Length: 109
Image (cartoon, rainbow, N blue to C red; front, side, top):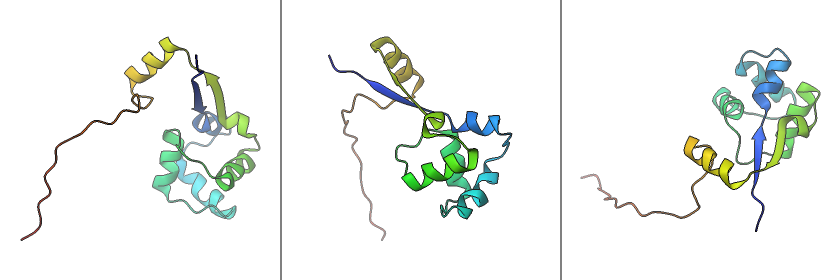
């Protein structure tokens, strides 16, 4: 049986611990460290777990909050029951199978 792992993104909690109340506060702080993100990208970064994360961004966040990657990301093993709960809540991807959707492309006249 293969292990299923899940990553929990804790940036919002870390921000609260450091009394950051707005995601826009992060934009100039990241820019000072060479990471250029729009305020919308920063909002998404805080609101939901990123699928990809550059080392530059991770290092900048660790520097801003004087923390380690372990404070930002928690890795845990997910059992079968918990996976079903997460899937029902929409927090994980589907089983990886693609479904076909019929579409029609119209060209402008």
